[in-house]
Image (cartoon, rainbow, N blue to C red):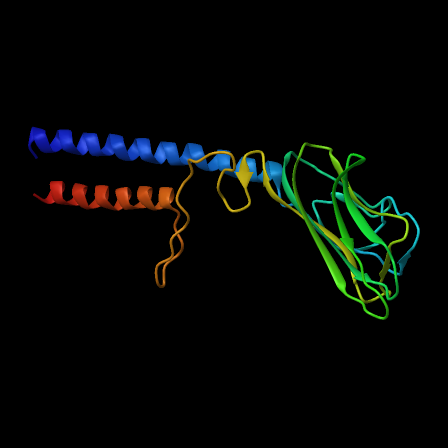
Length: 221
């Protein structure tokens, strides 16, 4: 083997080692960030009517999902386990008759958003409110019903519900990107009959294959 080929092999090995070291350094950091935030989502329901009086907060006593244990069914309050962006949904089946239906999303005792629904006569409808907010760790969120509101549910209908999900935390999005930053790996690509590979990981795998083929060629020539 000539000196030129030997130098080429050494250079390729250096590049390959650097790529593998960089990939190994990045993977633990990404895993650690995901484990630190973890998945946070809940879906809870109130059994029975909320009729005409103040409920602050509404206590949703039937817990259907509470991953991350951030919702407290004793007081109806969600407490953010980490700083991040969260989305909440409140849905209520309206009572028949004339009622002044106003519900509010409360954050640390402050009204941040209200939704209003008004029907008359024998009509009824399912009213749904959406709320997205950036929270700090230990911020508290709940739903309030004003005096005069009325929502209906039975013990099994689940027609008065409160749900929420953490969309992003600690700079990490649940969609594998970084919120607040324009730089991230491309989205994973899928080829037929092959395992999905992200842009960054795929680049490293391609380089490793190229290095192996080059080494085989240099040794046999």
